[in-house]
Image (tube, rainbow, N blue to C red):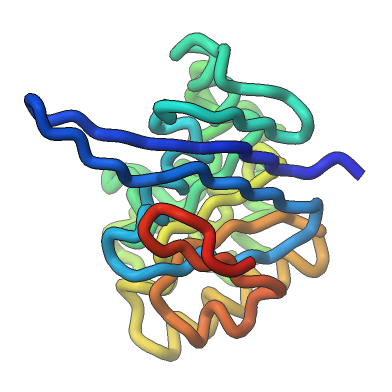
Length: 226
């Protein structure tokens, strides 16, 4: 079975003048298809940096990454952008939705932006996803009119739009109250179970981590448990 994600020897150093800060120190990480994995660690442990590297938002100082067997470290910036759009889904703590767009337009955006507009098929796919996340009566609302939990459900639908190999979630329940957080977590678990979607969830919340199938803990830029 080819891993959805295989990272080997990932290092990250940031330079500020003569000062060098080592954030990641040789991370090895592998995720199989259909896993729901929590990435944990104290502030400064490197987990957000690792998530950004896996999401092709940062280039590591050293190491290799393969998504579904395809190595990505040699891609140009333009190729990385296309790869991110087609193969990765993102769920952020503060949604990062487009405020002047409706829910359906936000969901369709990952497919519509490269194509220059929303096709009939894209709109139908976005509608189906919004029905799935329980927002069939909010499709044409501007996202500024939605609650925090509803916005995060739009973000989950958007992450699924292009049927990504891997969904990366950065503190997806961190800005929500407990009831909304439970609903969002239940939805991610449902998508993981029914679609066999692979998730890597960066979280400080032990309740979120406890409901994942595996935990990976970082400390001082290294994997301490997996």
